[in-house]
Length: 67
Image 1 (cartoon, rainbow, N blue to C red):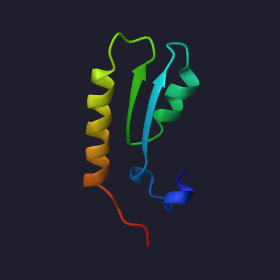
Image 2: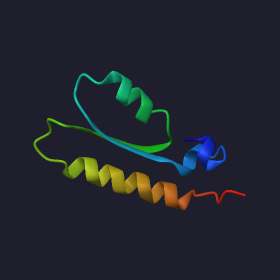
Image 3: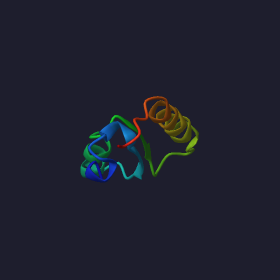
């Protein structure tokens, strides 16, 4: 994915709604500067989507156009 963004990792936003026992998915999402994680068992996804919007906003603010 980073290669597709010409090496600009911060141009990627990762979002994941995962199971509590999905450490590999959590590790993947945490590899990126911008992203959000939610638990599939949560009673509400409000916090997840608020975090996702924050991550998207940050990514847009820091976007570096590929050459």
